[in-house]
Image (cartoon, rainbow, N blue to C red; front, side):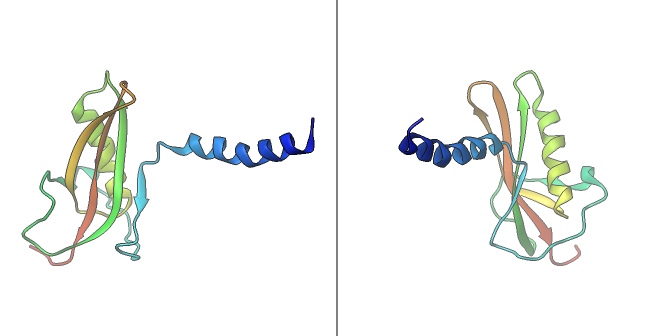
Length: 118
């Protein structure tokens, strides 16, 4: 193998490996560097399609959950709640559903932590 070909392969190999990590379930954003303890009750994480709430909160992370098309929306929302709870969230705002690559259901939103008790 020529040196030029080997160099190109060495450069492309990390890119191929990086593309295998597409299905992450939560990404801590630069919005809020605080780390919260996990919410021990994922079922208590509230879900909202609106992008803003009437009570004070801090944005924690972009959370994403995936499911096959044979899974129900409710099953994917359970995964999303679990992911948000892992970040310590009280709620998810700006909830959206998408179909990705024609066979994967995606739910995503912004995990938030309430700053005042209601």
